[in-house]
Image: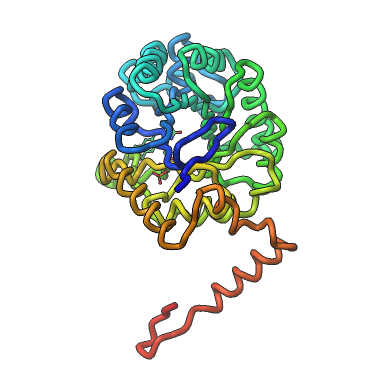
Length: 338
Ligand SMILES: Cc1cc2nc3c(=O)[nH]c(=O)nc-3n(C[C@H](O)[C@H](O)[C@H](O)COP(=O)(O)O)c2cc1C
């Protein structure tokens, strides 16, 4: 059975990639990922703030709506202690490359163009096989238009692409008013792959302390539906490879993602919950499923359930939306059920 796939021109032995998470903070874990069967790892991100903090320059985008540099800095975790600094990050990539044969994908997390982008080059020099660019930005300024936000994304992608020769994947959020158009423009700005979707962590309020607290909830398989839909819509229309992240927990989730059109699936929550060895279970289940249904290769499945064969995708989406809403029926006890 042929589980191989390609991602941004890189040959991978299967479509199971470990997503950026604290699991890649040490080389032992990265080695264990390879042993468990992962085909590649995306390193946890090096943040723009970590880099600019070092040079004592906070980018102006991050200062939007805040009164002073000092107050802005107080929002962040102590950046001196935050994970490891840029130099140690590069060193970790070098050590990871020495420890494993599988591709190691560096990750930069930022929102603006600027000196920190130089680190793309340094990640390349450290030996990474590709770079994932996570653009995480919540446009809170009521004076900032969608066009400006989009341009910010495109500028970062273009600048990173211009500074390195590695393939670049861009991890985006689903919150664009015209996701399909944005995906296409990102491809034109140089993205080799799109990673759908970033999970936005929604903070909570602590009513006792009257403070905003970060509230991390791991995903579940229900969250897969959003990236699944968008990969199915964009497959064959936007000239990039697609990776699905958010909600990949089972072999069924992997199969669905491949059929929507993903080249790879990425997992973080499932491994944080079940341990790194869980990758082996997913691979076993995947092979079993393919064997029972006489599939010979992963490539055979990729895109088989995408929108490519749908003549009017927007109408198709509206029709499905109506079908779902009409599938609600009151049960005899008066409760609404499916
Ligand atoms: C604890 C934690 C840390 C994460 N750190 C990063 C990170 O540094 N960079 C990044 O791009 N994504 C990061 N992510 C997001 C994951 O890579 C992934 O895209 C997201 O969790 C959705 O996938 P999942 O459903 O498999 O968890 C993190 C996720 C978790 C849970």
